[in-house]
Length: 317
Ligand SMILES: NC(=O)c1ccc[n+]([C@@H]2O[C@H](COP(=O)([O-])OP(=O)(O)OC[C@H]3O[C@@H](n4cnc5c(N)ncnc54)[C@H](O)[C@@H]3O)[C@@H](O)[C@H]2O)c1
Image (tube, rainbow, N blue to C red):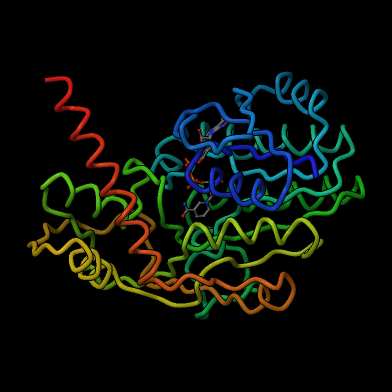
């Protein structure tokens, strides 16, 4: 299958690219490398450096590559940035999504898979675990942009007779995330491996749903042939507190620390846990990696990264 992944040089996108390559697909990547990097891409995936805000370049790239399946992950991903600059957030996440959708429609792609966010589209959820039928009630501009993206994908692709699947991820963790993402596991590991105290926001008792990036990538492969016209929560269905994460990360690294504390992050929610039954029933997908195993793999990766940075610094001395 000819597949195209926007944001494929990023954290989750690069794992999607890897999973697609392993499943035997041809993969092209559109990315402007603002947070992603060339080094994240596996052999055999071709990168086209394009900004999704550039309508002409996006259209020309689709015309040249003519993909049959499109995975749209390129986005501004920070909730705080969306609050301080909602225009920029909307330009990338709403207008950029429109550019990608329209280009996919123009070349007659068969399937469009959209990366949405289970942690933000439901807002302060009325029930836990949150099912896909819960009202979409985002409380941040980022969440608004994801809801808008979902609707544009559904309506515009639907009118063109193109099949769509929306994947609403939980908190994704794993190798190749960067500390600038402000994701708690990556931020803790970055601090601890640099000999700095980790910082706990709020009281650390907020509990969220964390899912391993390799499992998330596999859901995309499933979505090529299943889940048409549907939205799915892609998470673990289990919650874990920030305090517990720090305890487990320290145990895995074999260190003891006293964390610093900071106030609650704006628009943070106390609890969020996604019901993933629908993905199991309709995509045949389950989160196969336990938190313990996912954390082990993640720690191993960041340890190797820290070690190669240390070696590189030594050779420069
Ligand atoms: N990480 C999570 O926990 C999580 C949770 C829910 C949803 N998501 C969504 O998953 C997707 C991937 O997120 P991620 O965590 O891998 O972040 P990421 O920053 O690693 O990936 C985003 C990629 O998009 C690229 N990009 C950004 N702006 C672009 C633009 N204007 N044009 C072209 N490329 C651009 C970046 O260079 C990067 O490679 C995003 O859509 C994000 O909103 C992530």
